[in-house]
Amino acid sequence: MRISFIRKIRLLIIIVFIIGILQSGIILHLINTQGSLLQMKLDIQNTIFIGLFIQFLLVLSIILYIPRFLNKAFSEIHNIIKDITQGIYTIDIDLDNSKTPIDKEFFAVISSLKEMLKTILTFDKLKKDKIVEHHNRIVSILNLTDDGFVIVDIKGNFVYINEKVTETFPALSDKTNIIDTNFPPEIENNIKKYTLNILNSHTKQEPQQFFVPSLKRHIVLNSAMIRDAAGQPTGAIIALTNLEKRKQNKEDDL
Image (cartoon, rainbow, N blue to C red; front, side, top):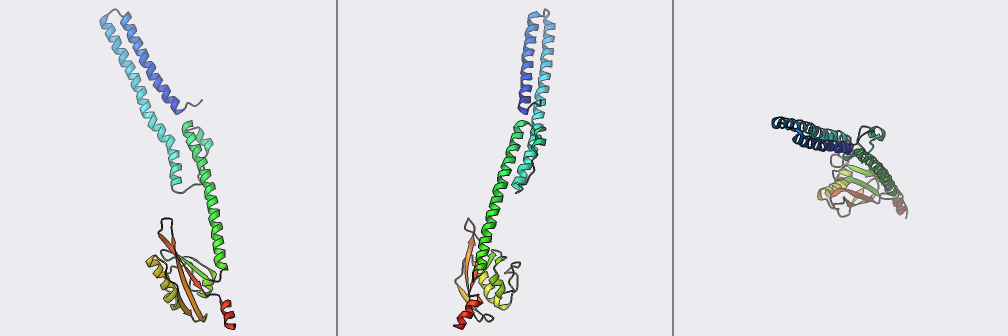
């Protein structure tokens, strides 16, 4: 049967205590039975030296054993926690293999870590599913609307462009950066300039319109800032209204 870490320490301490008792008993026995004072003195000295030497070895073994054991026991726990702090939750913890070399007290910690990882993975999956669900809802709404929408982050990278915008302005792509990319004059002097004003000022801009010759009508730009939980700007949404050709054609017909 494997002796636990705590039981080993207790056993060594008890042995040290027993040796101390035996040492005291032997000294008392020598005092009561020894006739020669010189011989009694030598026997007591030898008993004390032998007892202290054995106690020293036991205490030294405790001092050396505890750090070595703790280092071995905590090494796997440390590696697991290190992976968790780096966002790695898919850690395979083999409890069957860990049960033998690790003390039961520390095995209980590893077992608790495994249960915690299961909970984190479950929560992470539910969170991702919910985020994807809400993302798909928003994208579907933006694609169904007659208006165009462009979402950029604070560095000017396109996060999202709906179909209405790409159909009207093919030069805009969600794989480009609005700050670094040169666009046709129609986009450069209107959409890009309007967006840069938002990103530079970190505030929404008043609605602005510009004429699009290919559509034969004005497009209205409107904006809103995206902020995080601390209120810091993380991006912006630019809305382009009056893009839908069918509505304009019907108005022309009237």
